[in-house]
Length: 327
Image (cartoon, rainbow, N blue to C red):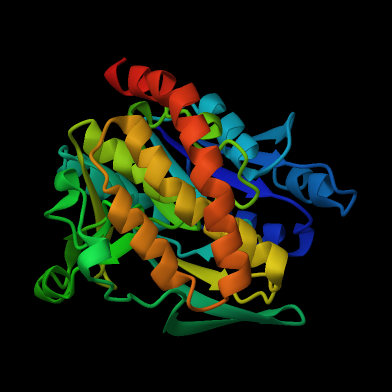
């Protein structure tokens, strides 16, 4: 089983070094490491070049703009049977690659896997690892968060309103492994043939944040007849440590950031419709009104903007998206 690792990086030379060092320490090294850089003059290229004698690195300079363009470029280039994703500010445990290989090899029905991510802090040249989850699981249920039909057995899912949802019952009854499409780009892996032709740049037209693009890769795995799962047990899950940063693509503050985050949340309704899956317009509107109670101005503005633009994108791109699935 040939394994590729994809890292997207921009202005993170300091952290990128730690990510690449963690790949050097793997008990089973990946067959190739693809690093897609957006030029930033921060020394990232020099950092990557220092590892070319230790890892089979393919350095790609991003040809377009935005994170979705970078991920699409990397996915197309990857040659492995399995493609693993690692954030440029994450550090993989030494068994990270070998665990993914084992899990995919032993579970042919599984097409996508996401592992556990814990927090890490950097003090000078020292990395402090914490056994504290980077993202806590949240139970989100309700009338406007009913799962898509194809995801009814999933503990974490996209709903018929386009919002995310999570079943307390399923999450609490499956301690070790749970069906989920709540994947994180900092630590996830796919059978490459299942995501090679996912039209991310079409689905994410107009997006600035690429928020939840990982969920759509996982959803495509399910649409194509495979399972997407989250490994939840510490000893069996692929584990990474994620550096705690105040500012990042999706954790920045302010009106603009919140507007573009909710653009992607609201656009999910139209993306799901592009697949040909059944959505509910009234739940979509209700859900957006409910989540706009907090941070009303940016979120509701994004919803109104997306309501009309999303319908246009749906009409324009639905045939292209459905063709990619059937093909």
